[in-house]
Length: 244
Image 1: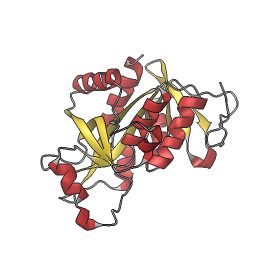
Image 2: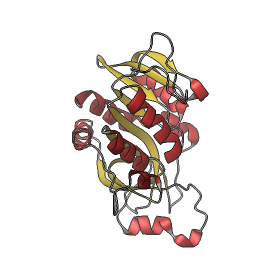
Image 3: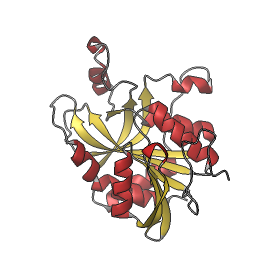
């Protein structure tokens, strides 16, 4: 196993390692908060470019947590290196998303079964036609069971992964179209993670908390996003230790 990636975006500190399962929030400070709040004996394994990564124990089993940055290019860089260079088997995205539906509120949990996207990232895989990036079934099933155990109503379905946070053409009505086609959330990373897992022969799942509502304007603050996603975390950690 290599300890240093060719691009040096992840460089293990002496005596540290990455667990087989990695939880990935976008914000490295959220990764730190997760490690400190949920993991026993967390150890910092990476701080290159301040993309903090920690390995610790949850209910006696090793789990790592590391930031991914925002958007498909950033997440897929780190996901690819974790899969290919650090022998990681499973990545669970724990992120925030926007919700286009009418019957939702902030802090609702969404488990992404599949992801539509406007990104060209999947074209590099070069499968004729349309490639449909999906979650690992066992991880998805375990997450649904974990949500039930936690008493959390988690919606399961397709999300829309966009390369744009600020879409340049408002007349395109992307959010309206996502709503009309039944997408449960709009975010910026899930399709890239699923495509990377597929191309690497690995496993992935995306669990999201709704941080703001597209049409009502209801939203969490940046600090609330970092600190308040407890239900999503419980589901993700239970999924991490129950998937083998």
